Amino acid sequence: MTCKKLILPLLLTVLLIHIAPAFGSKISKTELDRLRMVDKLLKAQIGEMESEFKASPALDKYRVEYLATVACKTPKAFSAAQIAKIIDQARFVFLGDEHTTAESQKNTINVLNLMKRNSRPVTLVLEWIDESHQEVINQFLEGKFSGTELRKKIAFDKDWGFSWADYSKVLASAKKLKVPVLLVERLKKRHSLSERDTHIAGKIAEDANKNEHMRYLTVYGEYHLLGPGHLTEKCSKLGLKSQAILVGDAPEVYWKLLAQTMDPDQVEFAQLKGNVYFIRNGTPLERSMSYRNYLMKILGYKASDFEDRVGATDIIPKAGAAASFDELHQTR
Image 1 (cartoon, rainbow, N blue to C red):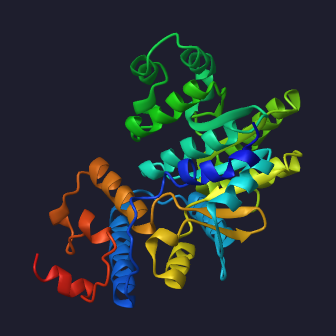
Image 2 (image 1 turned 180 degrees about the vertical axis):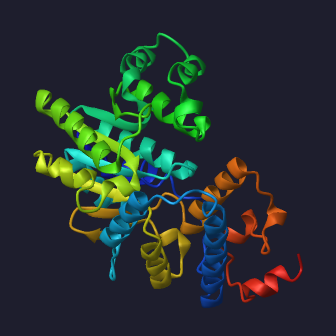
Protein backbone atom coordinates (compact mmCIF):
# COMPACT_ATOMS: atom_id res chain seq x y z
CA MET A 1 0.00 0.00 0.00
CA THR A 2 1.41 3.39 -0.94
CA CYS A 3 1.51 6.52 1.17
CA LYS A 4 -1.00 8.25 -1.15
CA LYS A 5 -3.72 5.86 0.03
CA LEU A 6 -2.85 6.61 3.65
CA ILE A 7 -2.82 10.42 3.66
CA LEU A 8 -5.95 10.75 5.81
CA PRO A 9 -4.87 8.23 8.49
CA LEU A 10 -1.41 9.76 8.53
CA LEU A 11 -2.92 13.20 8.89
CA LEU A 12 -4.47 12.05 12.15
CA THR A 13 -1.98 9.52 13.49
CA VAL A 14 1.48 10.55 12.32
CA LEU A 15 2.13 14.17 11.48
CA LEU A 16 -0.14 15.67 14.11
CA ILE A 17 1.02 13.46 16.99
CA HIS A 18 3.69 16.02 17.86
CA ILE A 19 1.18 18.82 18.40
CA ALA A 20 0.44 19.47 22.07
CA PRO A 21 -3.04 18.67 23.44
CA ALA A 22 -5.63 20.86 21.76
CA PHE A 23 -5.78 24.37 23.16
CA GLY A 24 -9.28 24.69 21.77
CA SER A 25 -9.63 28.46 21.69
CA LYS A 26 -8.23 31.62 20.20
CA ILE A 27 -6.10 34.00 22.22
CA SER A 28 -6.35 37.75 22.58
CA LYS A 29 -3.91 40.33 21.23
CA THR A 30 -2.89 41.03 24.84
CA GLU A 31 -2.15 37.35 25.37
CA LEU A 32 -0.06 37.25 22.21
CA ASP A 33 1.95 40.21 23.53
CA ARG A 34 2.38 38.44 26.87
CA LEU A 35 3.68 35.28 25.22
CA ARG A 36 6.19 37.29 23.23
CA MET A 37 7.34 39.08 26.38
CA VAL A 38 7.89 35.75 28.13
CA ASP A 39 9.94 34.54 25.18
CA LYS A 40 11.99 37.73 25.25
CA LEU A 41 12.77 37.18 28.94
CA LEU A 42 13.73 33.56 28.34
CA LYS A 43 16.11 34.59 25.56
CA ALA A 44 17.65 37.21 27.85
CA GLN A 45 18.28 34.54 30.48
CA ILE A 46 19.77 32.25 27.83
CA GLY A 47 22.02 35.07 26.67
CA GLU A 48 23.19 35.70 30.23
CA MET A 49 24.25 32.08 30.63
CA GLU A 50 25.73 31.75 27.15
CA SER A 51 28.00 34.71 27.94
CA GLU A 52 29.88 32.36 30.26
CA PHE A 53 31.01 30.35 27.26
CA LYS A 54 33.78 31.47 24.95
CA ALA A 55 32.10 32.75 21.80
CA SER A 56 32.77 30.87 18.57
CA PRO A 57 32.93 33.25 15.60
CA ALA A 58 32.44 30.31 13.22
CA LEU A 59 29.28 29.17 15.03
CA ASP A 60 27.94 32.74 15.17
CA LYS A 61 28.46 33.06 11.42
CA TYR A 62 26.82 29.69 10.87
CA ARG A 63 23.81 30.76 12.92
CA VAL A 64 23.44 34.08 11.09
CA GLU A 65 23.59 32.31 7.72
CA TYR A 66 20.93 29.82 8.84
CA LEU A 67 18.56 32.50 10.17
CA ALA A 68 18.94 34.55 6.99
CA THR A 69 17.93 31.49 4.97
CA VAL A 70 14.77 30.75 6.99
CA ALA A 71 13.68 34.40 7.15
CA CYS A 72 10.30 34.66 5.46
CA LYS A 73 8.02 37.69 5.35
CA THR A 74 4.96 35.76 4.16
CA PRO A 75 5.05 32.10 5.24
CA LYS A 76 2.40 30.02 3.50
CA ALA A 77 0.52 27.80 5.95
CA PHE A 78 0.37 24.14 4.91
CA SER A 79 -1.81 21.29 6.08
CA ALA A 80 -0.48 18.00 7.39
CA ALA A 81 -1.77 16.32 4.22
CA GLN A 82 0.25 18.72 2.04
CA ILE A 83 3.41 18.12 4.06
CA ALA A 84 2.84 14.36 3.95
CA LYS A 85 2.67 14.50 0.15
CA ILE A 86 5.86 16.58 -0.05
CA ILE A 87 7.75 14.18 2.20
CA ASP A 88 6.44 11.20 0.27
CA GLN A 89 7.75 12.59 -3.03
CA ALA A 90 11.25 13.50 -1.82
CA ARG A 91 14.12 11.04 -1.87
CA PHE A 92 16.22 13.06 0.59
CA VAL A 93 14.36 14.45 3.60
CA PHE A 94 16.27 16.66 6.03
CA LEU A 95 14.75 17.27 9.45
CA GLY A 96 16.07 19.79 11.95
CA ASP A 97 16.81 18.52 15.45
CA GLU A 98 16.50 20.75 18.50
CA HIS A 99 18.67 18.79 20.92
CA THR A 100 16.99 19.85 24.16
CA THR A 101 13.34 19.63 23.06
CA ALA A 102 11.50 16.31 23.33
CA GLU A 103 9.04 17.39 20.63
CA SER A 104 11.90 17.40 18.16
CA GLN A 105 12.76 13.76 18.75
CA LYS A 106 9.05 12.90 18.52
CA ASN A 107 8.99 14.56 15.11
CA THR A 108 11.85 12.34 14.00
CA ILE A 109 9.79 9.29 14.88
CA ASN A 110 6.67 10.71 13.20
CA VAL A 111 8.44 11.53 9.93
CA LEU A 112 10.26 8.18 9.96
CA ASN A 113 6.92 6.38 10.34
CA LEU A 114 5.52 8.43 7.48
CA MET A 115 8.43 7.63 5.16
CA LYS A 116 8.25 3.95 6.08
CA ARG A 117 4.70 3.79 4.69
CA ASN A 118 6.13 4.31 1.21
CA SER A 119 7.03 1.17 -0.75
CA ARG A 120 10.64 2.37 -1.16
CA PRO A 121 13.03 1.57 1.71
CA VAL A 122 14.37 4.32 3.97
CA THR A 123 17.63 4.83 5.86
CA LEU A 124 17.87 7.03 8.96
CA VAL A 125 20.95 9.28 9.13
CA LEU A 126 21.84 10.49 12.65
CA GLU A 127 24.16 13.12 14.09
CA TRP A 128 24.47 12.08 17.70
CA ILE A 129 26.43 8.81 17.48
CA ASP A 130 30.04 8.62 16.35
CA GLU A 131 30.47 6.80 13.04
CA SER A 132 32.94 4.39 14.67
CA HIS A 133 29.93 2.76 16.36
CA GLN A 134 28.26 1.69 13.10
CA GLU A 135 28.65 -2.02 13.80
CA VAL A 136 27.36 -1.55 17.36
CA ILE A 137 24.23 0.15 16.02
CA ASN A 138 23.75 -2.61 13.47
CA GLN A 139 23.93 -5.21 16.22
CA PHE A 140 21.42 -3.29 18.35
CA LEU A 141 18.98 -3.09 15.43
CA GLU A 142 19.38 -6.86 15.04
CA GLY A 143 18.35 -7.30 18.69
CA LYS A 144 21.71 -8.52 20.00
CA PHE A 145 21.64 -6.35 23.14
CA SER A 146 19.46 -3.92 25.08
CA GLY A 147 19.15 -0.16 24.95
CA THR A 148 20.84 0.12 28.35
CA GLU A 149 23.89 -1.69 27.00
CA LEU A 150 23.79 0.43 23.86
CA ARG A 151 23.93 3.65 25.87
CA LYS A 152 27.27 2.56 27.33
CA LYS A 153 28.66 1.09 24.12
CA ILE A 154 28.15 4.31 22.13
CA ALA A 155 29.36 6.55 25.01
CA PHE A 156 26.13 8.54 24.74
CA ASP A 157 26.56 10.55 27.93
CA LYS A 158 30.15 11.46 27.10
CA ASP A 159 29.80 12.19 23.39
CA TRP A 160 26.31 13.70 23.33
CA GLY A 161 24.87 14.21 26.80
CA PHE A 162 21.32 15.29 26.04
CA SER A 163 18.24 13.27 27.03
CA TRP A 164 18.76 9.55 26.56
CA ALA A 165 15.06 9.01 27.32
CA ASP A 166 14.15 11.07 24.24
CA TYR A 167 16.89 10.01 21.86
CA SER A 168 16.67 6.30 22.69
CA LYS A 169 13.08 6.31 21.44
CA VAL A 170 14.38 7.22 17.98
CA LEU A 171 16.56 4.11 17.88
CA ALA A 172 13.77 1.98 19.34
CA SER A 173 11.51 3.19 16.54
CA ALA A 174 14.13 2.41 13.87
CA LYS A 175 14.49 -1.08 15.34
CA LYS A 176 10.74 -1.65 15.38
CA LEU A 177 10.35 -0.43 11.81
CA LYS A 178 13.42 -2.38 10.63
CA VAL A 179 15.02 0.82 9.31
CA PRO A 180 18.82 0.83 8.89
CA VAL A 181 20.76 3.64 10.56
CA LEU A 182 23.69 5.34 8.85
CA LEU A 183 26.25 7.07 11.07
CA VAL A 184 28.11 9.97 9.45
CA GLU A 185 29.43 12.06 12.34
CA ARG A 186 32.88 12.26 13.95
CA LEU A 187 32.23 13.19 17.55
CA LYS A 188 35.55 12.02 18.93
CA LYS A 189 37.61 14.65 17.12
CA ARG A 190 37.16 18.36 16.50
CA HIS A 191 36.40 19.45 12.97
CA SER A 192 35.17 22.73 11.58
CA LEU A 193 31.49 23.08 10.72
CA SER A 194 32.33 23.18 7.02
CA GLU A 195 34.52 20.08 7.29
CA ARG A 196 31.75 18.26 9.09
CA ASP A 197 29.17 19.13 6.43
CA THR A 198 31.53 18.02 3.66
CA HIS A 199 32.13 14.69 5.39
CA ILE A 200 28.43 14.12 6.11
CA ALA A 201 27.36 14.91 2.55
CA GLY A 202 30.06 12.65 1.16
CA LYS A 203 28.99 9.66 3.26
CA ILE A 204 25.31 10.09 2.38
CA ALA A 205 26.18 10.41 -1.32
CA GLU A 206 28.38 7.31 -1.16
CA ASP A 207 25.59 5.26 0.37
CA ALA A 208 22.92 6.69 -1.94
CA ASN A 209 24.96 5.91 -5.06
CA LYS A 210 25.20 2.29 -3.96
CA ASN A 211 21.47 2.07 -3.16
CA GLU A 212 19.57 3.88 -5.89
CA HIS A 213 16.13 2.88 -4.56
CA MET A 214 16.88 3.97 -0.98
CA ARG A 215 15.36 7.11 0.53
CA TYR A 216 17.06 9.01 3.37
CA LEU A 217 15.85 10.83 6.46
CA THR A 218 18.76 12.92 7.73
CA VAL A 219 18.23 14.40 11.19
CA TYR A 220 20.72 17.08 12.17
CA GLY A 221 21.10 20.28 14.17
CA GLU A 222 19.22 22.93 12.24
CA TYR A 223 22.12 25.30 11.66
CA HIS A 224 23.74 22.54 9.61
CA LEU A 225 20.81 22.26 7.26
CA LEU A 226 20.52 25.70 5.68
CA GLY A 227 22.90 28.41 4.59
CA PRO A 228 25.53 28.94 1.90
CA GLY A 229 27.87 25.96 1.93
CA HIS A 230 25.87 24.17 4.62
CA LEU A 231 24.84 20.53 4.49
CA THR A 232 21.87 20.55 2.10
CA GLU A 233 23.71 22.75 -0.38
CA LYS A 234 26.71 20.42 -0.33
CA CYS A 235 24.41 17.44 -0.82
CA SER A 236 22.83 19.15 -3.82
CA LYS A 237 26.24 19.70 -5.39
CA LEU A 238 26.85 15.96 -5.05
CA GLY A 239 23.65 15.22 -6.96
CA LEU A 240 21.32 14.64 -3.99
CA LYS A 241 18.68 17.09 -5.22
CA SER A 242 15.27 15.53 -4.54
CA GLN A 243 15.04 17.24 -1.16
CA ALA A 244 12.47 18.32 1.41
CA ILE A 245 13.93 20.37 4.26
CA LEU A 246 11.89 20.74 7.47
CA VAL A 247 13.04 23.07 10.24
CA GLY A 248 11.47 24.26 13.48
CA ASP A 249 13.95 26.96 14.45
CA ALA A 250 12.13 29.81 12.74
CA PRO A 251 10.58 31.73 15.64
CA GLU A 252 9.43 34.74 13.65
CA VAL A 253 7.60 32.42 11.28
CA TYR A 254 5.76 30.91 14.24
CA TRP A 255 4.78 34.32 15.59
CA LYS A 256 3.58 35.48 12.16
CA LEU A 257 1.44 32.38 11.74
CA LEU A 258 0.03 32.76 15.24
CA ALA A 259 -0.77 36.44 14.64
CA GLN A 260 -2.69 35.44 11.51
CA THR A 261 -4.90 32.86 13.23
CA MET A 262 -4.64 33.78 16.94
CA ASP A 263 -5.14 30.05 17.50
CA PRO A 264 -2.11 28.02 18.74
CA ASP A 265 -3.66 24.80 17.39
CA GLN A 266 -3.51 26.15 13.84
CA VAL A 267 0.26 26.77 13.82
CA GLU A 268 1.57 23.50 12.42
CA PHE A 269 3.34 23.63 9.04
CA ALA A 270 4.26 26.27 6.48
CA GLN A 271 6.27 26.71 3.33
CA LEU A 272 9.10 29.21 3.75
CA LYS A 273 10.66 29.08 0.31
CA GLY A 274 11.13 26.46 -2.38
CA ASN A 275 11.71 23.09 -0.71
CA VAL A 276 12.12 24.57 2.81
CA TYR A 277 9.25 24.07 5.25
CA PHE A 278 8.46 25.00 8.82
CA ILE A 279 7.45 22.13 11.12
CA ARG A 280 6.39 22.87 14.64
CA ASN A 281 8.63 20.94 17.01
CA GLY A 282 7.68 22.93 20.03
CA THR A 283 6.69 26.57 20.18
CA PRO A 284 9.45 29.19 20.48
CA LEU A 285 8.56 29.37 24.17
CA GLU A 286 8.86 25.62 24.66
CA ARG A 287 12.15 25.54 22.78
CA SER A 288 13.55 28.49 24.75
CA MET A 289 12.38 27.01 28.05
CA SER A 290 13.95 23.60 27.38
CA TYR A 291 17.24 25.16 26.28
CA ARG A 292 17.30 27.54 29.24
CA ASN A 293 16.69 24.67 31.64
CA TYR A 294 19.47 22.67 29.98
CA LEU A 295 21.91 25.55 30.44
CA MET A 296 20.81 26.02 34.05
CA LYS A 297 21.53 22.35 34.73
CA ILE A 298 25.02 22.28 33.25
CA LEU A 299 26.01 25.67 34.72
CA GLY A 300 24.42 25.23 38.14
CA TYR A 301 21.97 28.13 37.90
CA LYS A 302 18.86 28.37 40.08
CA ALA A 303 15.58 30.14 39.37
CA SER A 304 16.44 32.67 42.07
CA ASP A 305 19.51 33.70 40.05
CA PHE A 306 17.27 35.55 37.59
CA GLU A 307 15.51 38.82 38.31
CA ASP A 308 12.38 37.72 36.43
CA ARG A 309 11.06 34.30 37.28
CA VAL A 310 9.69 32.47 34.23
CA GLY A 311 8.14 29.08 34.91
CA ALA A 312 6.42 26.33 32.98
CA THR A 313 2.94 27.84 33.40
CA ASP A 314 4.05 31.13 31.84
CA ILE A 315 4.62 29.56 28.42
CA ILE A 316 1.11 28.08 28.19
CA PRO A 317 -1.36 30.15 26.11
CA LYS A 318 -4.33 31.41 28.09
CA ALA A 319 -7.69 31.80 26.37
CA GLY A 320 -9.02 35.31 26.44
CA ALA A 321 -6.30 36.51 28.82
CA ALA A 322 -6.46 40.25 29.38
CA ALA A 323 -3.72 40.62 31.96
CA SER A 324 -0.27 41.81 30.99
CA PHE A 325 2.89 39.92 31.89
CA ASP A 326 3.64 42.36 34.72
CA GLU A 327 0.14 42.03 36.16
CA LEU A 328 0.35 38.25 36.14
CA HIS A 329 3.62 38.33 38.04
CA GLN A 330 2.53 40.79 40.69
CA THR A 331 0.72 37.99 42.53
CA ARG A 332 3.73 35.63 42.62
